[in-house]
Amino acid sequence: MALEVGIVGLPNIGKSTLFSALTKVQAEAANYPFCTIDPNIGIVQLRDPRMNRLTELVTPDSIVPATLQVVDIAGLVKGASQGEGLGNKFLSHIRQVHAVAHVVRCFEDPNVVHVDGKIDPVGDVEVIQTELILSDLEQTERKIERLSRQLKSDRSLVAQMHVFERLRDYLGEGKFARRMEISEDDKALVAELNLLTMKPYLYIANISEDGLKNPEVHLQQLNELAAEEGVEVIPICAQVEAELAEMEDDESELFMEELGIDSSGLDRLTHSGYRMLEQITYFTAGKQEVRAWEIRKGTTAPEAAGRIHTDFEKGFIRAEVFHFDDINRLGSESSVKEAGKWRLEGRDYVVQDGDIMHFRFNV
Image (cartoon, rainbow, N blue to C red; front, top):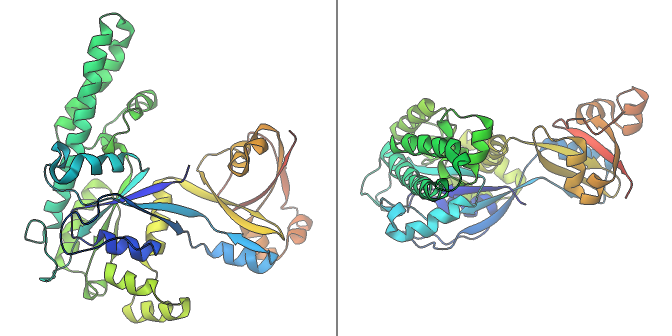
């Protein structure tokens, strides 16, 4: 199943423009609310310098980088949880993604209307967060109603009822479910509701081109809010990203240098998305193909083998392992072996970011 990051926010804050630039998929964008109804989906490649180095060393016939799936979800408005602006449909789209990137407008432009008529990043965030909480509150209350009926014949569900009642009260205070202190067992129990406010998230501050060099007051306001929440903010100018998307690599590097930015919004978002989803990368490297595989931190060798094919996991025997840092320093797999850095690992081995692996299996 592809890892998905959903891009959310109010209408007319640059979501679709940003999505098109990041994924090079042409999302519909217009100067009025709800021009996007169904979500747009695009695949974003993770730019990883290690892939370039492995390609240089191994000279494979093909390369396959790691990817993230990005979903552009139509703009939400106040009252979305009660169906305003097709809100219930849009909220259901958010439930399907693994993490949320909340785009917040932090630029002034009289030619681009704001749904509330003024630029107010903190107020915009509160609108979206309120709708997500209200939607989750409704989900939780439905669960409590079902449990109430089941309790009449099954008293073993009392402990579950206490968990969901506590969750209901927490959401009722206007707080995100993911901030509630809860045991791992109870977290697994709550996970069945697929709550919007349990998903990891970050903010994308859509700023002006001038704001890339001179941060404006709106960005500062969002940064202060995010610091209180312990959430990352990625400042991006959607218009600049749209221009970068049309350029060749050499041209885009010069353009970024002129603007005083080290990397594109694409790179920052994909790497942050990886961190949010606790993903790491291992590689398979041979003459036929160099490929990056996305796995969750803490994945064991057999589970990592299963990313390639289920037979690899079922018939797992051993994993041949060495690290990118070693081949990068020594120049070849044979040199890695000579230096004693190549090894065999068993079923309990936990894969590390940057491992290069070959699996022995028998089915």
